[in-house]
Amino acid sequence: MSLQIDFGKPIVMWGSCYYQDNELESFGPIEKPVTSYLFHTSDVEILKNWLLTAPESFDAMNNTLQCIAVDHEGKDLLHMWFQDFQSVNPFAKYRDTNELFEKLHNLIESWRSIGIHTLSFEFYKRINLLTV
Image 1 (cartoon, helix red, strand yellow):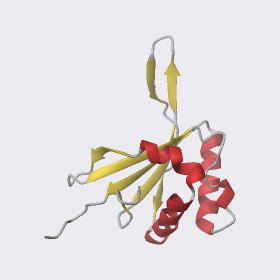
Image 2: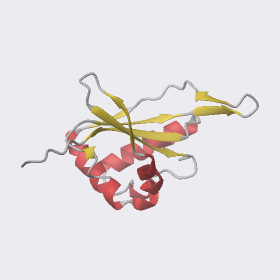
Image 3: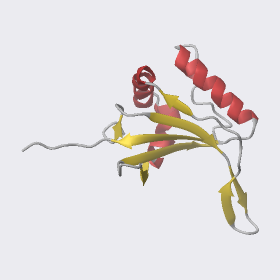
């Protein structure tokens, strides 16, 4: 995972909620008022270390990591998500370790209270330059 993510660029986290209508076999977003979280430079290193050392929450997320968009400059954006965090807040276990995890834990709890069930992250894809 760490080889694909550029931890020197901004990282955004947000919650989303989708409906599923089995009768119509349709699937789509539910509009909910959700504030995203932009990780600042000091937060990125904490998040990076956590992503690389907290596999109990992110094994499933790592399997979802994919490039699904580009930014306005044509740079690849990676998307990763954690579904059904209604049962497990991935930051709960770590909220007492530093202020960032406490803030993220509280933000996720507020999202859970309005029915948000998918936690998403967007990263820039790391560019590997090979020298000859």
